[in-house]
Length: 474
Image (cartoon, rainbow, N blue to C red):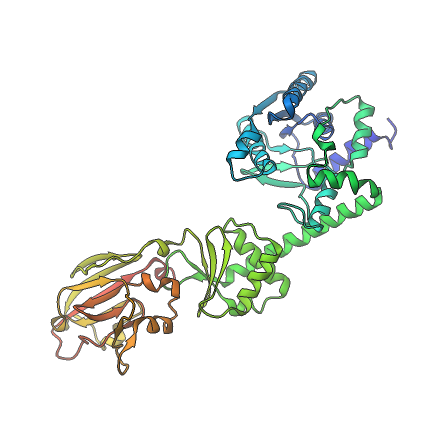
């Protein structure tokens, strides 16, 4: 063959893509996803021609009035001719998609990739190779720019991704459709046409039929290059934002399982970093985030009033506290652990919601030097045991609760004191109160009352220590 033939161009570009993007190593076994169409058949033959150990996999969607089953038979025959293994899977995708919450396209993609990656694991293949090529990339970029892409923005798809922890590679990413067809025809490669590709039912088909013919080769190459630049820049910003984001996150002082974002430092980030940090934060929760929602979440973090909420979707939200923005998800522990009324075991251990209380009785001559004020912490308080009305109880706050905070004149509302102590509103019903008869002794982790202080005349001291997982992580 001459140096400029389609055969040389396609094989050299596939080889270049594999080397440049580190898609495969010499000796790797690769599973080619083969639908029977032009691109996947070209991919299969190219990998074989380049000397890789290739196996094929075909997933029959049971659609197009039996045509998909004919595609499966065609792929099996091609694999027999090439003397390579062919793995088949099948499912009535349209029927099952109707019973799911997904569209046909989304459900089909999910099931197809589950089959492909599962087969790759079973067969010990290093990667799944798909037939996505440059013009598919151009279409994806344009759909993203037009706001029509379902899950990929203008950056399009990468040369390599992962699905179910299996590499998914695209060796044809540097080859255009015309080049691939010329190569296939020159090599005598046959393929089957999917009749639905010519039907303007889907956005991609309409764009392929109406817009792509207007773009010449140089324009398509420029769009593909733009995609590569944007993906590279986005990956860098995502990584940088993730690194900075981790420096701003800390466990909530009052709530196990809840993370707080330092909004003061966040607001000092450059705009681009802030937006990528929001995207990373929300994606870590497994929640898709559109660009508009990203802007809205950023605006919330910049200027929301204390006590405000921003709903992220799928049961997750941001709550603006005095100490920063709290990330609330359905897995946030305290939101599912209400405080039930009960007796505080003295001495011993008592559980109340997310809190665990350890109590012990001490003789005054057993404690170390210093005053009770020096012994107390956010999680530990001391009382004169003999001055307390028994039994001591634990309960959740009630509307209208008031008590006399130690060292302060008069009575205060419990919820106002909680707010002053930066306990977020969504947690105030989850903070246990320790009571003696009708008197509130301690708003846990916040303030104690005036009852039963330890004095020089105290003979027996009650020590109460609370344990909250988030507090213990600080």
